[in-house]
Length: 376
Image (cartoon, rainbow, N blue to C red; front, side, top):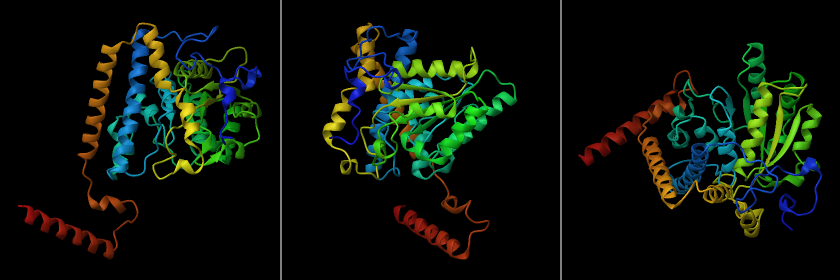
């Protein structure tokens, strides 16, 4: 039996309401009976689809670049990209996004330049700098540390009378085993902050399955202990994610009838690739498991829905693919065109570079000068 068996997500057996994920589309991309399709215009739906197509193509290129040695270790997002794109589409410009190291698409949709996702992986620290007019925090590498910080920023909105904005904080299922997460969610509940915590449950904390992290039936159920709302959504259904996150953000900004502002959302999803390109997922899961989840692919489901609605056809699909490929090509070229001084490697390590490093700098300079002379 698979270590990550969430077959009940698509089972016909009745489930308690608390554990039944919210869905809008079935696995073939058709609205489920009784489901409410989000009120999105045709341009909005096409924009969401194009962003998802961009995320998937970028992910493929990034893995290829890493295998060629052109970028450092990369965290793939295919399979989780639908939840990322849809959740960021629910954000208003004034809202803040707190990402982890995997939320590449979430960052780009909320305004981060695509090339800046690659440049830090090429050794250029400026890539982590977020423009002043983009409300995205730099990605968090230590697991769970973003949760108390997100709660703190959201608390500050109330102190400053900023009722028109909220925080969307991403975390993984593995982060729920960290003390920072419990502290941050407890704070969020006690101070009733305008925040949405989106837990991307892909079933594994690197290689540790969810069953070894918690005995709880769901992660969303943990929200009750913090005094906040908990929701479980099919994270591979972009329309369902958009709907759930939109409602949670609205409640965070303007709760009614004593509702708590914070919401903890468990987005049930799957990563097709490795935890990072330094990981070997074949050591802890099998190909059959991966293929079963690929049948629920968010890109295919959203595309099938748009086709059935007459919004997407072959010509539009071709135009979207051309734009996406051009954007990724431009991003790669822009990232690879950046040059950083060798001294940047230790610029923030020493107040003054020690003699041994200065000697190494000089040796590199001589070598480069010699190569330039030979090439002349």
